[in-house]
Length: 231
Length: 393
Image (cartoon, rainbow over all chains, first blue to last red):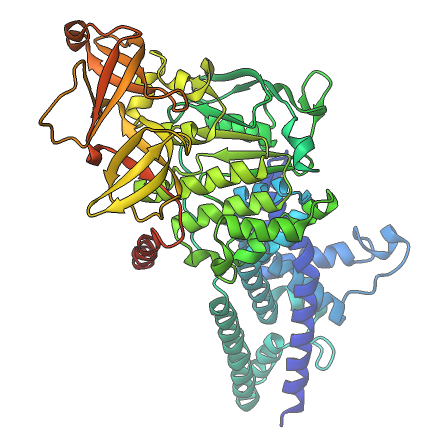
């Protein structure tokens, strides 16, 4: 078997799962905030969250590079110590995480918007506080959509290339993911390896889709509710 | 919280709430077990209920149950919905779609336990009273409309509420089903004795359930009193008539023969009997007979050779002008509520109707509708409804 390719696959899976876990909880909280509350600067927050979706990934990578460089906002001079992010697997995680934020937050937000706020009200009249209502009613009601958000975020992270090479580089065995490995193989004309990596990518992507569809079918959560009458 | 201490709790509502087209301005105190708020749709009834539930924070004023202040905008007091210990039953039931019937019923169980209620006992009596035993394992999406409303009501009762808030509990149901679910509400009223605020535009519902009625029109209270008195008030009657007013009389089934049934009206010792279309209820079952005000004829002498099955002696108690039409009230017996009868002004003067005048009331058996709640009856109907709901989905 191709050692290089398997390492890249393993690293890709590691990076993507870490990035998804990193994004999921704050992303879901933010999505709920955006779905349910009106506050000042909401549209700005919403726009910032969506930014990685419209910027070239290399631009996002460059911004991150600037932030984590010696003189950057999160660099050694500002913090007083070195986070040691650049050109490591952490950088790859960071790049994938940032790139998957818009997909996770948007999907989760739409999901929360689809949960009838009157059901949450109902839970509160039955004695559940805001937090308990969120945990016991909102989350289960939104679970399908949130799962979809996580899977979308994960697949986006697996496919991340532009921002990752910019900030983490393309070092075989350390920061070379599937995406960058395909790029390298193609650059040096190693068709055999490129095809193999392609096949691996295809099977990973396909299984992600199949798994998500299976989960979506298993529990029909959003039964139709009769609409409330007037007055 | 025992039923005894609950029953005495007075509800005080004095609020102003700006709505889309007018301001809701309501001021009442009530110590009755069931207080009804009656009005056409769009009168502000649901907004009132949601304010009492704590779901609308824009309201100004004061809300109090017993000694507990829920809202006082002067002192800035506001109790959150979860702190009000209410049992809220919205129009559409709002069951939790991700839980089965049992878990829905127990959604407020934690609070009931915190309040020291005997949950197991309450749960089993709710299941028995609302006939929910066979539904416990069902998914909410498979329930029919009537079943949904019963589960929603049961869920509120199982949460150990100090105040029940019912928003048009029958409005989402069709007429036959309404007749079937109403007796469940009467049972709950009798067995739980929880103070209740009920919002409705259905004259039958408020007559069957309320001790006192408050009529709301464009956000203002326009009448208040006992349901029968208020509904036949000249200001309110047109509203009630539009919503299908019926005289609602409590009674017992005596027997069924052929195509008809005999019903004793009023208390078990009353002598007034009525012939109705055949009922599937069992002899001895209590029920409610509905007779629309325009389905009753008045005769000053005992008529003969009539097809109508019921000719009942009565006495006129009052006459009211509704503008063109007159509303005559007549008493059948002291233990039966007065009947409201619609007549034209012409007939009024021809018959010289006035309080104290003895008359005969003529009621066709087929003019009577009966509200009876019994397992068995209506089951076929529920099944049928299930089917049609499935085919709709």
